[in-house]
Length: 291
DNA sequence: TAGATACCTTATAG
DNA sequence: ACTATAAGGTATC
Image (cartoon, rainbow, N blue to C red; front, side):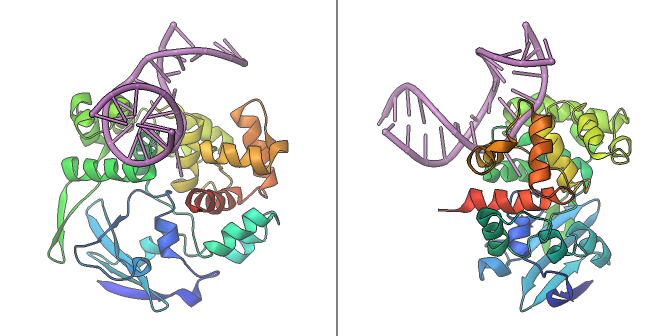
């Protein structure tokens, strides 16, 4: 099936390119060089997950999609197309840097990615660059995922928890995960066995959810915040990575505290509270890609 | 509870 | 060519 959504109908519009290449999602893949070699901002992105393939591109004022199923409702959820960006931006501070970030990437939306692949991707993100994190996720899909044929192309889905739980540490190290290999295997086991799963977390208030997520192996507060923001829709979560730590020192020194939890509270307040994660993501993408 | 250190692997700077 | 350092941190002592 296929369809298209007029971008002008979305509150605040859409920048699909910024949304999917700002380091928040590792589920969507580009089709560069295979079925597309046009302008970077109009490229197709594809996603294979739980037996379904969908692909999208933004072109000529439309968000076009094609899928093995009737995917539009899921697409609207995953890209949070209903979020009112002007209302969200109105909660952000008036700083030049924050406003420059919103101007530059206006239309960037926080994703609502599926829980398990997001958990694994951000466990893999420790001490790693964005490009290599994406490479690891591709390797996991290619090596352990199931294949689906769509449009004369073979797609690989992200492996199920049971599959990753059954993988050996050596096998995962072969895929380039390094010391994260046992973390991924053990966390997958916890999800597969039901020891700790999404339902145990996503009904909790934000800080309790973040705390609960650190029960997984390889998940500290920063990775837990990424899962909260990009998979569980806690829009107040602000992952404090090295970029944000630097930004706080430079632009918000009054928010610096002794602990992650306290700094997070102070910075969240500075970024307007309820939608701080939105502003943090604009800021992160801006700082990481300038120069 | 706070502080220090090891950890896989790759890319980049010097 | 070769070494040091950093890359969206976490676990362990």
